[in-house]
Length: 429
Ligand SMILES: NC(=O)c1ccc[n+]([C@@H]2O[C@H](COP(=O)([O-])OP(=O)(O)OC[C@H]3O[C@@H](n4cnc5c(N)ncnc54)[C@H](O)[C@@H]3O)[C@@H](O)[C@H]2O)c1
Image (cartoon, rainbow, N blue to C red; front, top):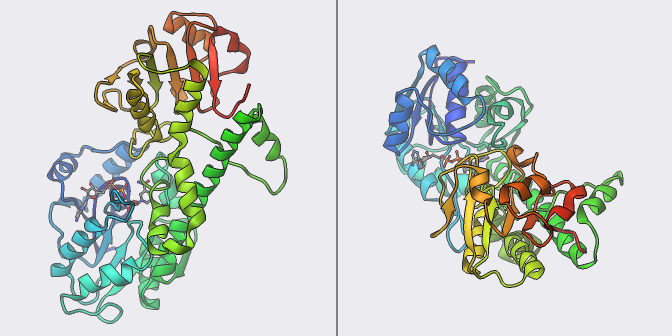
């Protein structure tokens, strides 16, 4: 391993920053680049702009090594790692402008012998049909003058630092040489196995993993709808079905969010629209789940106009501060559109205004006091101790007719159902 190699990490978000820190901790000289000056300024001050477990300590350690600096411009280096966003457009097509601009930023400083690795989740063929041509416009040839690879990031938010090290990694090099170089590079901190393939297979692997999750969650969500209609408790039914040695049904919920699982399947639909019926349908099932939840509430209590409601949790999954594509926020919008007066409480982002006219509360008691409906939409640890009795006390209206709880995450213990009306996702009466 050549620890003297200079690595330029382009994009310093949830993926780029921890990756830059990992390399810096291995003794590499690392320049972290971000187009947002406020991100660069914050990091230069030794502060963080994102929250992730263990990141502050790791960042301090990397800075102490002396090789980690930050810049708003891409600088000459031996290795370039692209970790910029790949969101989708309104029509669900991949928005590749950040990848394009990152590649365009590398082109003027790219020299013979360099290695470029794209990590951003991308539609199949992005490395060879988008990134490679942009880089080659400078006159150098990929596979001959410089090395090019795709290596998807597959970490779980909340456990990024741990999984960067422990997960297996896929490297898709344009050539065998690119594979070997990228493998040596990542092996400096990756303890999982590094599997080599070609760029397009590596792109496809990442999309298949997230699509697999999305389709399986859609199945659980569809089961929740059928169970409610059949007077079955879907949570019990799933638990029993999962005793089968070859069955592992996931948990239903308010929908699917985040900028990975709810986005990536569309990249496959975009490139193969005629061959992706199941993937498209699963996306639609999951996208419609917030509306299903609100319709279940309406079925239980009647028209929602004028109803005071508190939504507990806005993040797209438990115990994180990430609100991107969150189904909980869609629930808030639907309640507002139905005429509800909505308050929210998100312990990880207490000041977030989810929609116009919605009051963001700093505390749970403030959010639920005096409401007619409480919706528990995210299974944050902070909500695990909630019971119907505790909520009744905070709301101030005990008794079945007093208020309604919508439990989308199966968090409330069943014994206290008499304390209020409980609408459990996937549970038919
Ligand atoms: N966050 C995750 O858990 C996760 C997991 C797996 C894969 N991914 C993928 O990794 C990629 C990066 O995701 P993220 O969560 O780190 O995004 P992010 O939004 O947290 O950070 C991306 C950063 O890139 C910067 N940027 C945009 N264009 C730039 C450019 N041309 N040059 C320099 N900087 C630029 C942005 O300002 C931002 O700070 C995406 O493709 C995402 O799908 C993310």
